[in-house]
Image 1: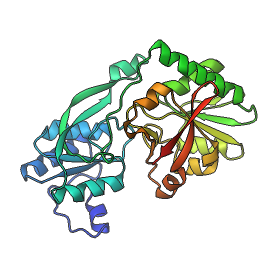
Image 2: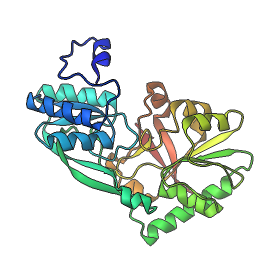
Image 3: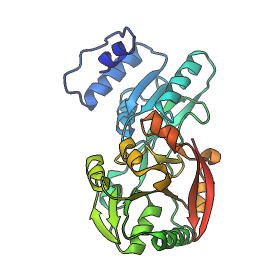
Image 4: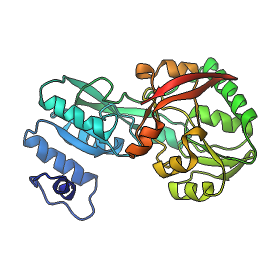
Length: 303
């Protein structure tokens, strides 16, 4: 589990156990237990919330950990904001420059999800080296007050009036984006990515391959909203909109929507990207317009 990657990167890893060709959560837990018993200084793991829960089950908070974001769901605050920042945190921690804090381990509440509601559940805490701006915040749910709903409807009205019937619109996950679908009278999948044209659903819950097929010969816009509390517009929860999809659509055709309330609650008042492709991340960084109400925009920095 990681031996080949470590050797390819120039390390001489110590093999603590032989894992089968196809590994499971039990292999993750067993390996974490062995490492904890060897009193390692820091346990790094790559994955998402499911892997974080496996590590929590195995070692509780006996050893400091740091997640390298490589999963689909990453609501927990035990992850670095991107892999490069994970490296920086690790170096700073070993130099004795960082404190240890408690990070929440979160995951989607499956019972609530099956009932059609998206809710993240707290499973526990683990020790994490903390550096502001480099460890991600826990995902927070948008509180659906009447004021919030009214702002979402105003944003939806703005978007619907600006839509071109000859263009495809890729609708990312999020309640603000769902409000746009509701105003158009089309059904929106809860966590999926959907594609519409001229108020008709062309495809629901698409993956990257299907997205690339649909947008190949059509002008396209992507409508996305930042994750509450974490500020990501790409790289968390919408990996179907891959770097290749973003390249094909172009930065100028990305529409970011968010209510004023959501933006005010974002840490450090900026947006983040972590697509896994450094070139695409560089293209997305800078300043971008965010639609916050009917005929109202604000400019946010993307990092």
